[in-house]
Amino acid sequence: MFYGALPIDFTCDPKCKNFINDAEYMKEGPDGKKFKQLGTDETGMSYEKYGHCADETEYVVTSAFDMYFNQD
Image (tube, rainbow, N blue to C red):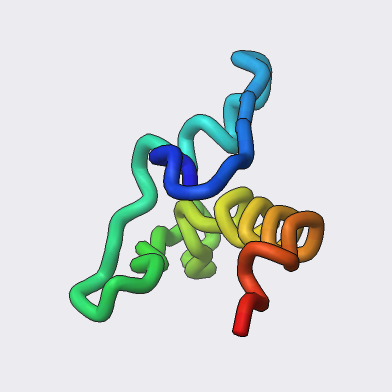
């Protein structure tokens, strides 16, 4: 979608650091889906390092432009 396959322009404000980090560091898994890399905080709790902004963007874009994603 972001490579010109669809007639959708996407712009990100440089102040959106979390989104930019997701875009730069999110990895693709062997199945072609988003690879959710886990990290551990100082208390020992695990968390997903990247992917939250990518998930949100996917939901917004596929909802806002559903006519491109639900073609029969």
